[in-house]
Image 1 (tube, rainbow, N blue to C red):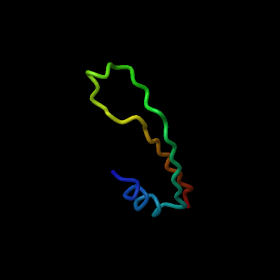
Image 2: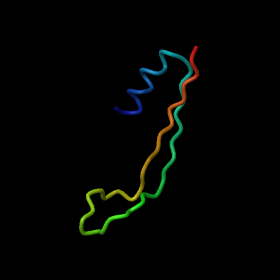
Image 3: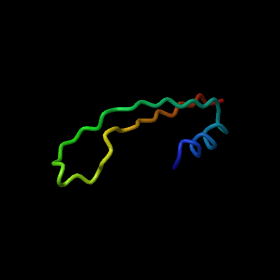
Image 4: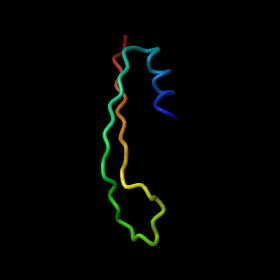
Amino acid sequence: MSAKDVKAIMVEFGKYDLASTSYQRFRADKKTNRNHKANKTEEYLHILEKK
């Protein structure tokens, strides 16, 4: 579900805001066995003030 889809639903219930933060990804595995190639992880906080 995209952030745009979440916003479309949440805005019906009140004031909506989105905050995001980027973190460096923790790698506990070896490079040869790595399934995830991304170096960063994006965290989203959906904020809703109900009417």
